[in-house]
Length: 250
Image (cartoon, rainbow, N blue to C red):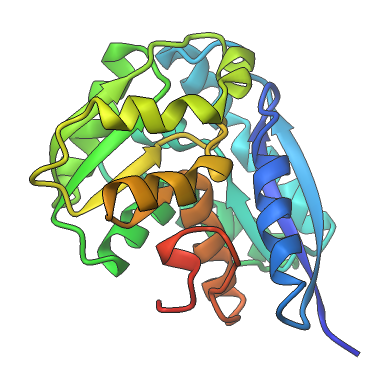
């Protein structure tokens, strides 16, 4: 019998995408590999993507990690990139370490990934030096995200802020609009396109089109998180139709 893994996610209360795209990718993987997955979430209150709301939300992540470790999940993902990146440079390392200690203290030890840390690590796996970034956030928060990525060693010569403040509206953004947005960006000096630096902005349906259009690897926060989860579970990082990172080449 194939092994079943419990996938835990800490999600903002208004997030409607991470519990869609992560299961979609891992369900697609089930068509080509024997492992099976179930999905479990705990929520942190947040409605508007503003720095003060994100800070208040992040405090709730400890409770969520405790709740998910009650369910003895096999891996735990913190599904809000901007909350981590807006807190301070390099904060994903502190968050991951603290949340994992909470699971250990609850006798339900689980490896922890953050979507922020997963994106940083994914870009390193792809050997990216110069990246283009699309983000739904307001301009000041997008600038924090760009600064965070630059602090991790990446050049960001091209980036776009869509300036959507209501998190439900971020989740309603049509991924079919993304190729045209990328087409307007200067990608001449770019190695990798970050199609969505946000786990709430839907992007998975547009990844193949943007890779074909640009000829460059395309990654999203959700794809990076899926890759990180599979690596923590010591499973092959392969998902059909989820871009270069999950092609099996890495």
